[in-house]
View 1 (tube, rainbow, N blue to C red):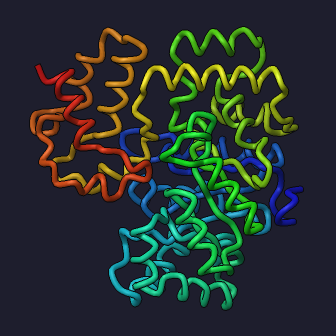
View 2 (cartoon, helix red, strand yellow):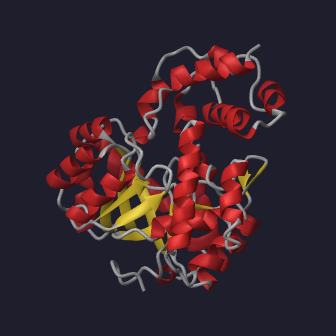
Amino acid sequence: MNPYFDNIHKNFGFGCMRLPMVNGEVDKEETCRMVDAFLDAGFNYFDTAHGYLGGKSETALRDCLTSRYPRDKYILTNKLSGHFISKPEDIRPLFRQQLEACGVDYFDFYLMHAQDKNSFLRYKSLKAYEISLELLAEGKIRHFGISFHDQADVLEQILTEYPQIEVVQIQLNYVDFEDPSVQARKCLEVCRKFGKPAIIMEPVKGGSLVNLPAQAQAIFDALQGGSNASYAIRFAASQEGVMMVLSGMGDMAMMTDNIGYMKDFRPLNAQEQAAVEQVCDIFRSLGAIPCTACRYCTEVCPQGIAIPDLFSLLNAHRIWNNWNTGYYYQNISTREGTRAKDCLECGACEGICPQHLSIRELLKDVSATFDK
């Protein structure tokens, strides 16, 4: 049983932003198998948001989870996403829409989505915190929290102004742990200072810590132990103050692997921790773009540029020396009008990027490499 909330089983959650897809639709059959395996293994925490998979994540959970299991068998977290509200009067109708889409009468946890300095000010102006706390008092939310993408001083400000916050979802992985822009360790320390249990997102950094460069892979291979994902997720779960680690699993193989090492969780030992630190050193030396492929940027790009895909190709070109990245750039990931050179430099992507990347400048790097 989780030490923070009695109804949460274990410390591993099913993130539903990267469900299996077939022809643009959620593969319901595969998702049902994954849900069944997850619950059968003793886990019960599911995380979604209204914008995930263009709204298809919520309805997939209705079809694959909430319509198939009693309400007390699972914990369901949803979020108030700023893309869908422009005035206070929008919040309650959106909330009712979310309940209906998920097929439930209440959410166990409801988070103010993707809070940073600017979005926090906007949510305050829309009375989003106050209205959500009203929903909490009405029993339509059981627990209230935030998901957070900024630096530690901003988190401290939010937790000071709203002590009613019960949980904080933060980005944390071993590469970002000491990163001066992400400040994962410092944010976790703020959570501990305020007595707020942390939910961890992006523990494998959007898959970047699964597909490692050769020299990093050799370090983990020498351990003769678990998968690359296991070291990343166990690193996050080993930190003091962490209530839950989420993994966005896209197929049954990922689910099976994650269940294997999280069902009877054990923290990293000294040898594994040393290996993780060596891999961090390698990543820092290679200069990879720290994109997590959340795809928020693609929702606002007027040119329809697949920004995370292009960054992935540039990382692959620079770090893994993949010979076919140019082919993928020209023929798979882009079409005329959606290449890096077609960026209008409007900056909409940078305003919504949780990693605060200089996307316009990085797209120039992509263009210099591939638009020849």
